[in-house]
Image 1 (tube, rainbow, N blue to C red):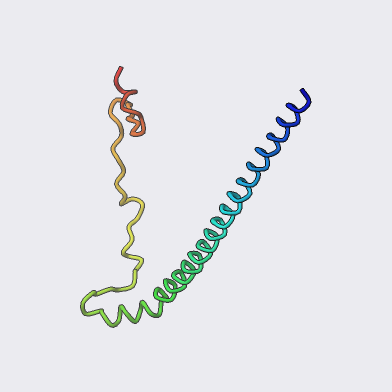
Image 2 (image 1 turned 30 degrees about the vertical axis):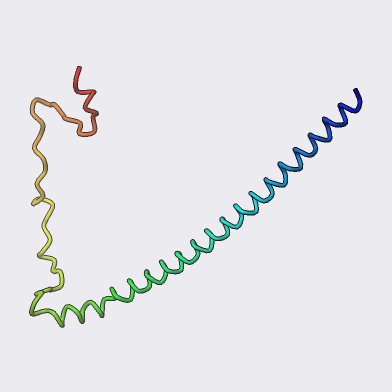
Length: 114
């Protein structure tokens, strides 16, 4: 009976060792993938920072003013004036609901059908 227990425990150790070996290499492969993804993220963030800087450079006010001046005859762009904006009294609001009923636009369709 003892030799059977020794053989079974030896086989259990072999299976555990094989499993640990495979898990070790699978973990190392995943760590390499994560490292590669982290490098890609860093490169994309650097590219995004460059694009943000380029956007800020292209949209600086003095450059835009030069473009407006250079293309004034075609675009007729002028600075905003206070008179161009309306007053709160000029805003049109939706009409009052009839008979005190309100319609909920967020209500589900199946809730409306009895």
